[in-house]
Amino acid sequence: MNVTSLDAPIVAVVWFVVLTCENDHSANIFSVANRKDIATGLVLAMTVWLIYCGDRLLDSFRSGAAVRTARHRFSRRNWRLLLLVWTTVFGIDAVVATIYLPSAVQLFGVVLALAVGLYLLWVHAFRRRSAMQWKEPIVGILFAAGVVGAYATNAGMMNGGRGVSVGVLLAGLFTLNCWIVSRSESVWLLRVGGESVSAGHIHDRFLYVWTIGLVALSVWGLATEWLAWTLGAAVVASCIALSGLVYRMQCVTSGKASRFALLADPALIVPPMLVVGTQLLYRSWMHVR
Image 1 (cartoon, rainbow, N blue to C red):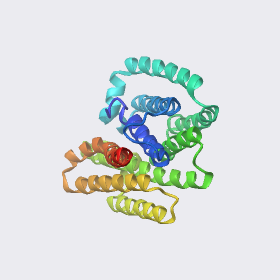
Image 2 (image 1 turned 30 degrees about the vertical axis):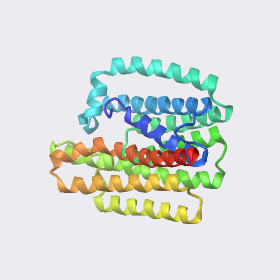
Image 3 (image 1 turned 120 degrees about the vertical axis):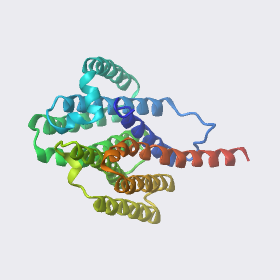
């Protein structure tokens, strides 16, 4: 999934579902999602894939270390096929968004598209090293904005202050994920003699401190009730999984460290799915009592 950029859309949809189940107290395994939620989730998944696939295609034609990673080599070898699929998905995405999405979600999508366009221009047009070093935080912020904004404009159930707080929390989590991916790949690039770019300068100790900060923010959110237990538990569980990857990267040789990049996205998929699944099973059990 990593080389085809399918992991990112799955992550986006999983956290969209977490936000939906958090605020829909009637949701259980017997309930059926409404058409608006399905359309928003589908457009979110396709849009995220378009952005990630396009970003990797542009990256793959840059000279330097980025081409040495597996996902960029795959994009460079199969760029014609990926471009054909990208164009097809773009057309489907545009049609579904135009026909089925509420106007508020459409307007948000236009604003986010402009932000993503500026990001791609900054990273790929200027191609400065400073841009690469800030790539992970920017990706994390844009990713969180897309997930939270898509939910908030679709459901209309999140006030401004709480939406920003949730967005900051998820931006921190997604940035941590990007740092770990880049950190593991940087270890491998240094081993083969390539130039370490992006988050290669991030130390493991900093990643631990960042993780502790996210857990503390989640606990504070649960205590002050701006964060429901579903989202809080999902964030904490993902933080534990990601910190486990950081620890394992310290315990293995540099040749094996790059393998943990493949586990960073599952660390954002499996824990929240378990949390939501547990919640839905509990609600279903209460429903049939």
